[in-house]
Length: 277
Length: 201
Image (cartoon, rainbow over all chains, first blue to last red; front, side, top):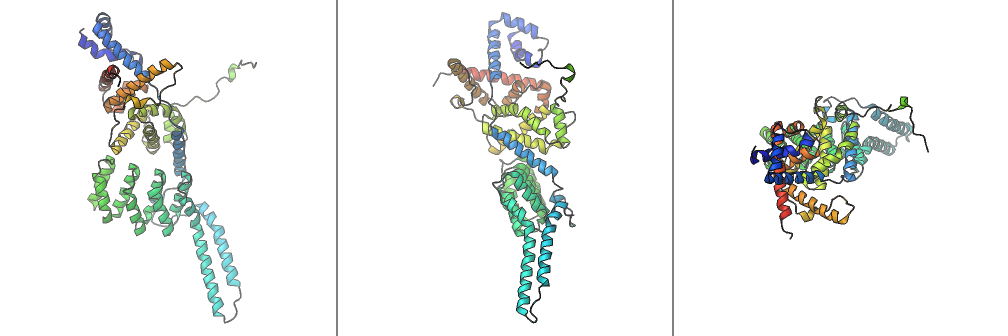
């Protein structure tokens, strides 16, 4: 066996303890190393490098990794436990979950009581001013009750600095609203554009999907597209704008499809979406 | 002193520890808490791999976080006959590649002087200094390796993976994985020796 052949199998000899016995030439190579000072030096240098490499240690990660992991796990469990997302909801009005009904029932009862009380009041005969005031008051009460249903989701959505779980709950609550008003949609768009959690952003986009026909939603999603860095969210955003077939999205898609820093799958998706326009 | 003699009938009645594979199958089937156990078992080695691969601790932590995120997202794709560790490093490679693509820069060769921060505490000062210098040089040598060479070297020497598993992760034959690992070790040796013989500045 010559020196060249021996040097080819030196790493295998060094790896014996780790990956099992070297091949059939190992015994012959060892005999050669014992007799050849040059190959012996070569073997020793390689063994020293491997030993130094094996002795390299890395200190443990910072507590941030564990904290972020368990936050992410809690978010995922929350999502897994939640009812089907808004995107899966059929066009027909979906059945309202039991807890939501339980929440609204006392509010509705209060409203009915108030309406009954006001309606039961005896206005002065012929007093049109009193009648008008009563109607105005009734209308205000109705509006107040209608607004209360969305207040909870407002406050949860607006807590950008709060725990991700709370923000996610806010998004999920907003997603269940059958006819969210501009304020709710605006909060969802804000969550999509600014929330630090990718899961929250994804759920916000899902909650916005049924309302893609609204100008507020389309322009909000379009504004969020160039800001987004997470490829998973980018893909969902592209699906969204492709579905709306909004020509205003073309420049943003074109930029994405040409940006070499963007994930390959995102660039491909942007190109496919452009082809649909 | 408390008598520690134990009735043989009561020994080890706790349920046996589940394997990584069994835990990941449980995650796939909806038991998401099982991923916590996998995280506790693997976060250290995974972080070590990514830290040596990227040469940057915060980046390694970010990528490790993304790996566990993808485990959850793609849990349904985990196969019955799979090896969890191989799957995890497969995801880790992809996440690291995505990161480098986004930042448009593979890790740069590091100056040994910049690498003295996170070294093991050694009890004797002189030995510690020598070890520290050696570690710094090795870090620098590792950083100067080609990305693919560094990857295969780290997988073959630190992660207790067989070449069959490594070949699966790298999507090549077992023979090719071996050749690449051995070539990488030789290249590292050359760079390491060159740095050791370089006159101190």
